[in-house]
Image (cartoon, rainbow, N blue to C red; front, side):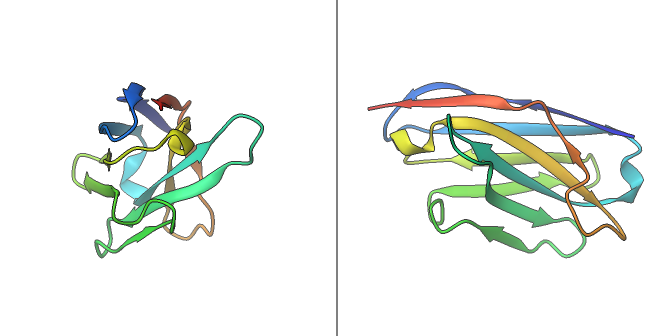
Length: 119
């Protein structure tokens, strides 16, 4: 089993920045990537960004490109999401997730951290 703990959420004004963190513990040797998703009120969970520790490649949702940066320390199984130029529409609960080798899906999820962007 893998446990994920997110932190760094909060309230920020539009145009501001926040940095989210995600720490993976437990059976982490089989992990090779981390992603961030978000879910606004009355909305479905959506993909935000992901990084593959295996080769360092990243991918972003169009809505956050140029504003958000995903990074991490694969050795320590830490992930970060730097969010700049925040907009009210970025308001959501942000979840980190990790994927194991041989899996075709994001296997483990954190409890989420709330981000609120005021206008």
